[in-house]
Image 1 (cartoon, rainbow, N blue to C red):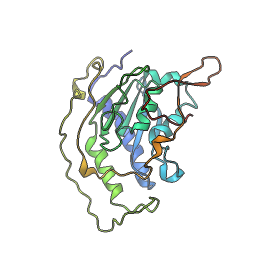
Image 2: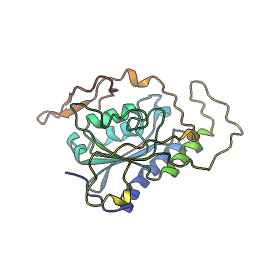
Image 3: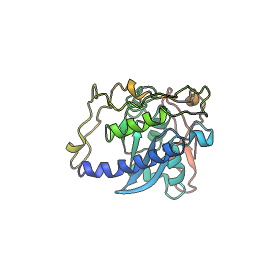
Image 4: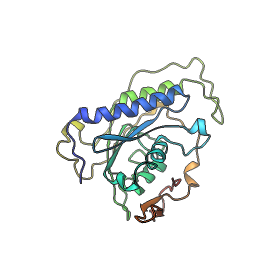
Length: 248
């Protein structure tokens, strides 16, 4: 069943929850990316990036939220749930979301280096034996970009090769979207339109960086189905070039 979309305020309320998590990450010296999983109009899971704290490159906000919500909910709940996340999911997270059968993803700004839902690859919609999910971008995009900029003008002593950032100025101009084939959120009345195209944009000014390069090539496969009797997560095949991820 498709998500019933009322108006832009409906989406903004949940994206604000994701922004709050990103702000917590920023205040904790983590890359400021946050998310919220929503089911039937209720937030069932929240997460923020914890890669610095855990020294684990897989602890992106989506994985943090999933590991928490799956302790209290069956995996099947994700089939009728949506994700709100401040930055487009990376290739690793985009693959996990598809294998978990997420219904839709709403993100703030795109991820031109590692994006898995249009920024680099189209993991959410590539032909495969797992159903695709819908993606909508640009919600609170400016706020998401500014959170990242605020982080990257700070010193990060946990990075493998810390960059000298003293005196670096915080840029406040936001580059316009160069291209978007996504429907405007205001126009999504009744139900989400079928198979929207992913957001494609260039945000070089965002200076998006990572200290977990290479992480996506060595993760074991995540399960896509749950055994109804035992609750055991069963592995499911994925397309050959998909990034596979850490099980919960």
